[in-house]
Image (tube, rainbow, N blue to C red; front, top):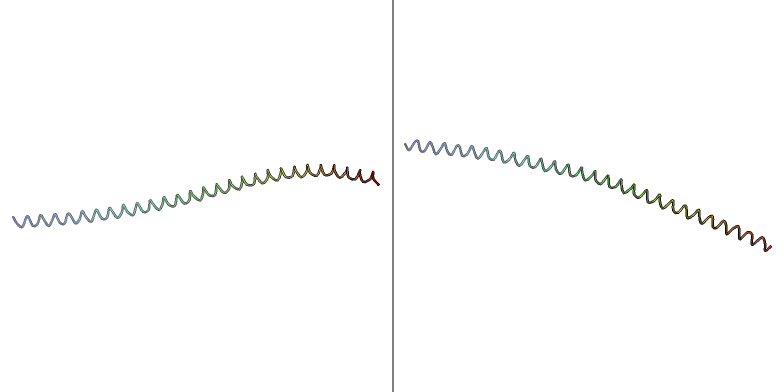
Length: 101
């Protein structure tokens, strides 16, 4: 009877050791899977951030080019207007000089 109790206790200990080993293996696999998933999330986030930055820079370049083109057009119009006005002043100045000679 005592031998049976001792054997039963030893079997229970062996079963407990096996279950602990199984649980440790499962926990290790869960940790490894979680680390891989976190790594994948980081890679995806990095790629998304690079793509977002590239798109924003492209849009900023486009916006800056449009503003530069608009400003150049405005300044060219002003320059053309100034030239026309100054040509009129020049003609009037030449006429005045010629009349006074």
